[in-house]
Length: 213
Ligand SMILES: N[C@@H](CCC(=O)N[C@@H](CS)C(=O)NCC(=O)O)C(=O)O
Image (tube, rainbow, N blue to C red; front, side):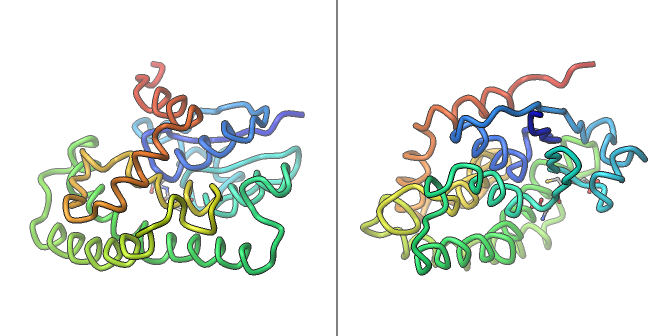
């Protein structure tokens, strides 16, 4: 039975899940969880994810939410591809994915909400105080990631891992979220490399498709 992925592609959290599934060539059924229609609030969906948020995954009776947990599960289907077997490299990938959840995603999401999501959902103008807070959090995190990427093509070791997918997903909203990336040449270089992946382009195309009526 194919995996089912419930996702709203414009969201970076959905993007990372779809991009990993595409990269690994895993057969999956894409189920649009259209946030513009409030599909995440449907009773049937709350059974899959009681947080009433997407993304979520179903693998037979097994249900999983939290985008980083989902990509970890997807990678476990193709061992030693995006999740190294070496224990220290694996811990390093986990470190960056936790940092993504606690620090990087939270900074990028604040700016995405103020500068993009509010307009998208007609929720009013960006709040300058929240934008300033988001920029401060983003700059704090971006300085760390940019310094780490100096001299590296990928976040962990010399190969592509889940850490790259998890972190780079936020860059897909860089423009509308107005992420202040200009000072961070290393992040831009690494992000441009990620964008050359065919899996990346395929999910970018899904982001651009209008939701079916
Ligand atoms: N930490 C969660 C965050 C999931 C999340 O916040 N999803 C948002 C969109 S990016 C959502 O579905 N929001 C709908 C709502 O809050 O009603 C993950 O990474 O999966």
